[in-house]
Structure formats: C-alpha cells, structure tokens
Length: 234
Image 1 (cartoon, one colour):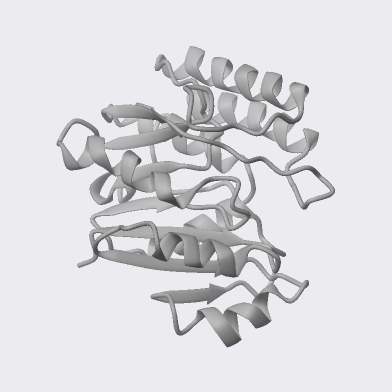
Image 2: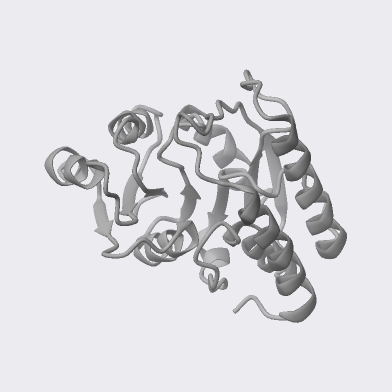
C-alpha cells in the first residue's frame, strides 16, 4: 500500500499540469501514489494527460461533465489507496516540496489531520488581492466560531488526512463549498488537527484563478449548513 496518495483535481490547467506532476514526483516523498482527476477540461489539458501524464502517474480519472472541485475530490478520494491522502491543486499556487512538512505531525503520531496555512508564515507569499485575504480570514473565523477550533486558514488547498479519517467523511458539495464542509466534518469527528505554515504563490484572474465572490457566498451557506443543520460526517 502506498504511504501517501496525492489527489490532484484539475480543470483547464494546460500551462501548469505537467510542471505540477513533475514537482510532485521530485518532492522526495516515499511510497507515492499520484491520482489526477480531470474535471472535463476544454483547453488541451485532457490531451496532455492522455499523451504525456498517464504513463507517469498511478491513475488519471476523467469527468465527462464539469462538476466542480468537490466532485473531483470525491472521485479522487474514492480511488486513493495510501495510508495518508493530501490534496494538491494543479495550478502550482502551492509548492509540492512542502508536502513532507505536512506529513511530519502525522508520521510522528501527533495528528490525524494537517492543514497547510498560508497565514502562519512560509518561506514566501505572493502579494495579491487584499479583499481575498479579508474574505478568507472572515470565512475561517465564522467556521471556527461554529466548530470551536482555532484554524488560521480553513480555505487552504493543503489538507492532509489519515486514511481512517477520510473513510468517515462523505463529501456532498460539488464545488468550492467542499472546504468548509470537510472542516466541519473533521471537527465533528474530534480529530487531532495540526497546522503547518506554508508558502503561497497565488494567481491573478488573468493567470487563470477561478474562485470568485459567488464561491464565498456559498462557503458561508456551507459553514452554516454543515455546522448547524447537519450533525453527522456522512
């Protein structure tokens, strides 16, 4: 069984997907399984996956309809076989070389889940949108108020799980609402959660950033939904 499964959802990432796969493979992770989920890309990403990447990774799975990040994670998590599972976005806003740092608290027996926080301080953070950072902090604060945990970055991509934790979570959200949903369900399980500071190289909208204000509104709905009205992780 692989030690760690890296689940990579991607949608229209033809400029970075090959570089992302190469970076994950060079990150020095032992027992590595790479699972890529293409969420019906239309910009040539699918052709790159079929022609170049399929021979390099453990599995490439294809959605025939664009369903969103949550749906892609649901597909990827179901296929993952590692003792630990982590999410890696295909756009390289997050540096795969830092995955080893996230593994450490679980490997040392201190954590069940590890979040990579963009606000705890990494080696470098690109300076971008002020209101995005305000929105992220607000969503994290609202989530914390209802989960009673003190995360600094609930919306982070880097979430690492022990397999037995992930097996107790059923993902319902299809799009970016998956982040507060997972956080609410992990908190309800009483998991030992650690945060590790990470670097972050965010993209502009011109460079392909996809999340927008509607996703922020949906995140608020999901925070309320999964903390106040859903009392189960399934």
